[in-house]
Image (tube, rainbow, N blue to C red; front, side, top):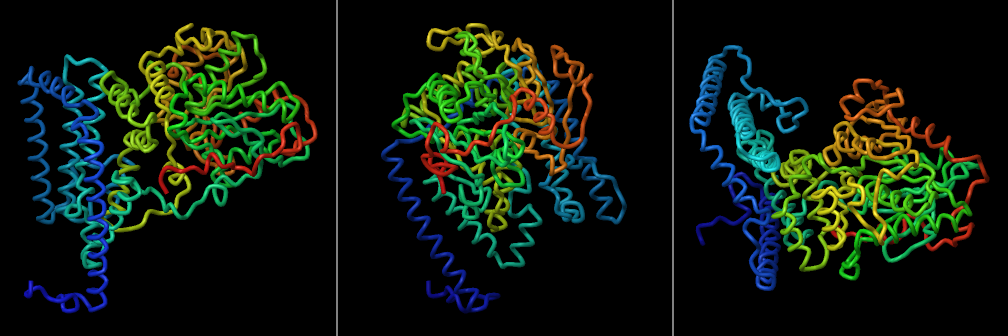
Length: 604
């Protein structure tokens, strides 16, 4: 040990730099020791975790057997790959000799992993990039061409193959990412030390599980600089708080508007900041806005089932809105899984001749799950049994599990980009309100969540007349005659537009379908002032059987769809009455918006 130089005489480091490095290593050692001790204690109490929690081993074994059943086809694919490698080696050699050559493989448009100029300008990194792209595309293409496997298994294999391919990108490794190499040289490795500290911070945040920070978590606070629209909590029960927002006009439409957000996320995606707040915009356009803020359930609420969410959610809210305003008739919005709940509620109300909802809007919500997109990958008996096993320990599914699932759908953007930024480059994540919200996860009560996964995604019972029975009431979506505004996102990877569109064939009342540019969030949260994206409308008044047929007769319009929705809803919202002040109607104010339920966080 005596041969090791003191920090102040480490070659290439000043005394101040050596002292800083020594302090960093000490911090890393202490935190690592603590995490290892906590892991050992948890291992003793919980026991070893299953090596294959998603039950993928048998899936890939069956797939491999099918692939090897046709060795000639596999050999031909390998020969094609080798031919592409030979071409890449040839053009790389020509380039090293000073010749101008065309690339063999180029990244897809918008692939941010290879945006640094060095991936193109430096021969070695360009070769690494192209070699990776050739291999990745060959592997994914080969997987798709294997015969004799069912569509469900094929989708699962393709999805998890993509996860592997994305993980193995040279951009994700320190020695093969030019940005990281440059940063390491320039900072004398300080970026990697800082990255290791960031890694430990995220492990500490996740209590031993990696909770990657996608945003500066200290830059935002709910009710301070996000979710700031003024209002009051005017009603609450064990499952939700009902917020009534302050009017922004002297007069408002007689018919109040109730928003039912998903319970797998916090409602303030619709109120991130004043510039893009749908809630604020709606109040400025004369609507009395009520919003359900779901509780973040814990062990006390594990017995809640789907019908509890209906009775204690929208049905309880309708009663409360009537008390607060004196109005029996209400219009409603259901967002994502909140829309699935609203469709169930509308069918339940229709069966009981309850016509209090005069118009309903669905934001990117599915009711027919025959084509649920890539989320369907997670819905088979093996994986659902795994989810049930996980939930059985605490009685709920931790919100971080759901967040990871959604992040996997866009792994390069929502996982690997932050691995590179936070851990390899050693940078702190940029403050971004949307990603702060995305990290604000909620728990799922076990009984309710497995009911939803099995009966909606796996069995598709909501789309089948009488498939669901709630309080002895058969649920039949065909009985819904309420006017509907149905929004879908063209690039939505959570509720695909083709899946959302299927609702047009189930509801019996008039349905105005609108296809918005972008995806699950930006396709909804797109204020007119932003002048972004576009939307499509088909003014023939008909909704043909498929989305493709609908699009053939649709017209594209620039910018937001919010004004079209306002025109549709305002015509169904009655005359104007004096603006209603929250807490001054039939229900007294309990506390200021956004309320206390939304402030319960799982990870800070």
